[in-house]
Image (cartoon, rainbow, N blue to C red; front, side):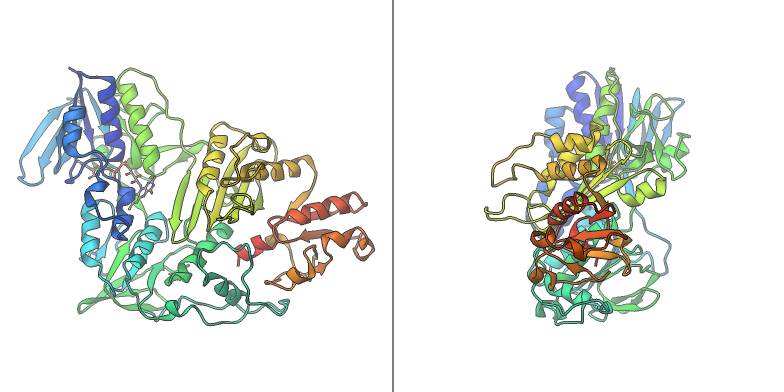
Length: 604
Ligand code: FAD
């Protein structure tokens, strides 16, 4: 009988076990899990903390009795594998409740030990009220700590930190109000008198948000009273200058507004220096300031692979300590497979090693390992970082590479911004999808996409682009893609088509693009919106000349022919027409500022 031992009984390990059983009825399959639970949804933990559902057992995707009876698995919970003896093909285990030890032989071993939350060596750690979140035990600890009015600080603005911050806000946690959630930027010298009416396209989910936008560009105005009430604050401390690093900064910025608008104080570019217990409370040291009277802290600053036993067994690790595997999930020992958060995998866009601690890849890698163990030479295709986050009323998602990463890697890339509606305007529920499509300007290959929206429909679009990346498609393919349309869902030209059309148009020379970050006050900017629109919202860069697109043909004499003309409108559509009019009237240096004013607003 083929004996397979799996270490770790959650995403990767359990996917592997189930697939193994389907392929090999005779195999002996033993799963060791040092925690009490098998097959639970780590991804669901924040939502339980936030009280979005009440059935804790609902987190157990397949219940233990079913795993035993239906899949005939030998499940050993609360049992830790302490070492791997590769020469004799056996593992040593210790039962955590009784302390009893033992050994088990294997023909194939699968390591799916995952990754642990990083707990840095900061002053004040460890502390019973400085918590991390990885499993249901951690979740219970947080749920037992949280109470209405508790003051919480979340360290880390990645997926887990953001999801937990939202959950704590749902639980009406409080954080020291001493760090204000609102802030002011100096008013631009070029700012015209501003209306307080919200820019129609700005991607925030709640009615208070637009006030924040105006505040950012102009002077401080009163926030929604809910937000200044001392019972409405949670704080996030993040070392980088943005949350959710897989997004480019301008795409993450709306999330900053969304957090602040929901009463979350956001401390960007702020490294947490340590903690001090003061009686029953904690003080969080931010270097430049303190957050006092904190009831508890959640550390969510990333994960570190649990590969100590693999290292001790002499398996090859990457410089960062991840298990090195081939496309069949085999480690440096052909009898040992590894999957999930503990491994280094391959980035298909950058064609480089990477790590991606997400459940989807872990499950597919588990399945791939099982197929190979059963003699099928299935290859794992690598990853591209497709991910999605709900943050209060917003959705942010991404796939492939972003501009930051491509620039660092020295790869050629270009991008377009666009803000199409999620479906036709006459149907209720319309909302702009704020999209960024990143592509290779040398051949049009799609490299990545990011979408932020306060409406529906981002998930289907990001998944369509994800498939395009997997198929190594180009912007011309997106342009031509046949996608489902009926008025409640999309338009005859889906936003994915539009993104492709826009980028393909640039590559064909129909128009040239620039972006706000390349515009200086000395540049000539032509605003082709209506005069009424042109008085609304911030104009921070340049001194735009306003000629509505409808009047452009008759007012060409007002435009310079000796310098570049940068054309803008609300989202870039009228500017495109204006660019075409200008080019066909002999102007040679004409650029569309990608995404128009909406892109500028997003970046404020
Ligand atoms: P894990 O699921 O962590 O399982 C590893 C298991 O191995 C652990 O239970 C551990 O106890 C056990 N183990 C470790 N060492 C030993 C040992 N020596 N002996 C016995 N057992 C051992 N991903 C998404 O794609 N989408 C999401 O929305 C999402 N949300 C998340 C939210 C949270 C709060 C967290 C923590 C993670 C989230 N993830 C999400 C990530 C996803 O859960 C992980 O990528 C996935 O669980 C990794 O699977 P894995 O099998 O590698 O590791």
